[in-house]
Length: 398
Ligand SMILES: Cc1ncc(COP(=O)(O)O)c(C=O)c1O
Image (cartoon, rainbow, N blue to C red; front, side):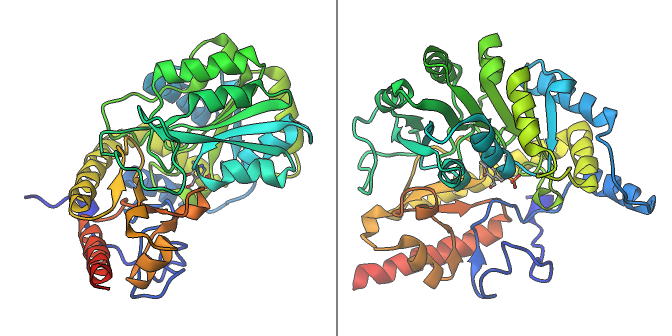
């Protein structure tokens, strides 16, 4: 079979890589959400061209980038966005924290379905807001998932929001904001239109602001379309802060660029006021990369998705022979794996000692899970799965 460009193993150990330089050289790093792939040529060429111009001073947001983002939202998600509703940021995490601080008050509660990417829960906590966690369930199961094994979880199942608990949280007197992660990290859920409509209906009924982290929206592996919750209707647009970035999809997280879409004038003004002089402008090269990615990166993205699907399949097949379970990971390159059947105090530590650094489930809200990043050459996943399987087999014998 022809080799894919994504098969190339790139040595990142000399690159001050957060992923590769955190653990010792004999550990395979499969934790933080960046990929071990070369950036697409269109991005590298655009950056090289800009660097050759030599002067790298303060920079305005190019009009060309604004129109590319507007076109991208229209073409990719059928979502009409106005250029002056865009806010350009050096990253997405700061926007989650800013939104919590600028758009809610100390007595307010912020509703966060989880386990979830930890900054969605940290944002309310660090802002001294009340964090109202709502569990995700395996669709069609009756029990919420706590620290127990999920007996009937299979690769066909999806993680969905516990509707009853969600409505109760929304109805609370001090409820003010919902923080959503769509597609969901770490569960991989791509929320369907009906699910988003239900979330929006409650937000409308109880007058809540929605902050929607959609950073993984161009990494959908199944045959589903990403639907920004703000695109549902005018009311949804008026109460939503949508956060997006090319950083995950095009593997340019180190360049520092993300954007928010805020159609509501009052929310946008409040957000901007809190941002000014505190959050710096985006990195010049991040702007260049974003423009190149959305303009010329589509063919590369399609190849990437095909490769990630193959990796996901490889992991699913490997898990079949192991006491590890994973629901359907409809999007992202992150596998959210239930290790509770192993009866370990700390599955993350166990696999780390076996030479595979995953992300600990406790970072997201369930320590019996691990999150495994499969955005790397398949050969690396093969080695990691061999180590995982060998470690589990020694466990059987004790
Ligand atoms: C859901 C989610 N939001 C935000 C981020 C980080 O965003 P940024 O690097 O732009 O701050 C990540 C990174 O993994 C993520 O998974």
